[in-house]
Length: 219
Image (tube, rainbow, N blue to C red; front, side, top):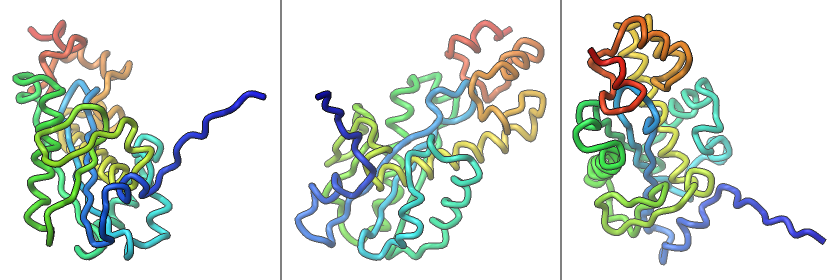
């Protein structure tokens, strides 16, 4: 008989493993946009009140990559309608110029740290832990990295939605001034149409100049 390992489903199990009391605060952090050729990398930081969070909304939360843009926007709007005693979030965007200066990994970690620091003053108590998606930790103490955390932890998944929505919105705004690049469709990733636009029109001030696919079009 072949044993099939069960894929962990999204839950609050990781959060609860760090909680000694039901009132303990656990945060989730994730980023979006590391693979984009243009625009900022964005991180979200979230807190979910496990007791009061609406079950109808909780069941919609998942890894942002598994949710359509329309659904992400709908979920995000529901997030924004919740009072602070049920849900809180902050985000931070590190622009392309900084990414080129310090590299994308360090920029991602910086965005995570900044989003965390923005949320911290709004909390009643210091978090017992901050769960971070991936295997690299920003300067947050204490924190715990979780590989594929956006598919395991509600807190991280919520943060991934916040980060993805804000990253896409920022790219949409940039795209209004550069319609020929179709940023509203490709969201900054190196699609065929994006690469054709780079070849035809060159780079914009929002492109990440140190990225290999962009470098060859810098004049």
